[in-house]
Length: 123
Image (cartoon, rainbow, N blue to C red; front, top):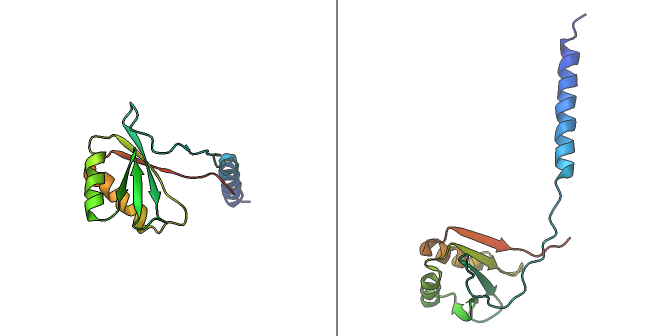
């Protein structure tokens, strides 16, 4: 009697249960994003940029200043982000993708090394 197929099945079951056990331990973190309005750059080079997509024109708050997301405003925002190591980007879930993408492009042009997307925890 050949035991090779049975040993193969046992090894597959062991691998399956190891993976299931590992995945069941992974849980979503309950995040509480910062609620401050317009925090200036911190000592570690981080700046919070908040997007208001309901305004006309669409604008972003970086530090204490509002930047419109048109060509002139994006140039000014890019100049503001130059020299920063990290930017935290906070946008409404209902904002069209192109709106945060404009700020991400400005951060990329400014040479920002890390952009964190701030999200609300929830169901």
